[in-house]
Image 1 (cartoon, rainbow, N blue to C red):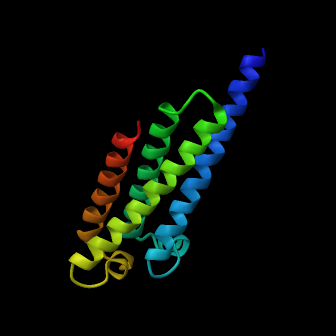
Image 2: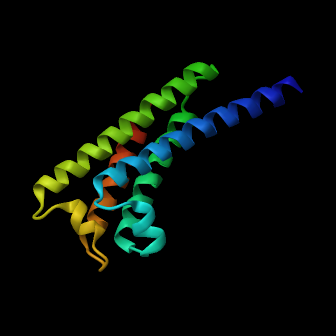
Length: 140
């Protein structure tokens, strides 16, 4: 029975870490996008902002999942490595967004906040997913 309780506590701890990292990912995307994501997505129905946020959250999920799967059997070490890899992934996704913004015409955040669909959102989303896949593959 104690093994079940320990497993449940570990699940809740990893779930909390993952949720916090996803909330941080939401905040970073919100920071990069003019306007508030809540308004853009849930009130205005902005598809560009939705795709950008979804790709960021999926990226964080991939990194956190990989970090959990490969984590040490020691709970504290496993949680710490999940936090570290999650933060590294968020930082690298943010850097990739800035680099893409510098390499393309206009301000990417403003383009992605426009109400009409724009192909740049798919490029940005691909960057999020690619960076998260690279981070996930690098976790050992």
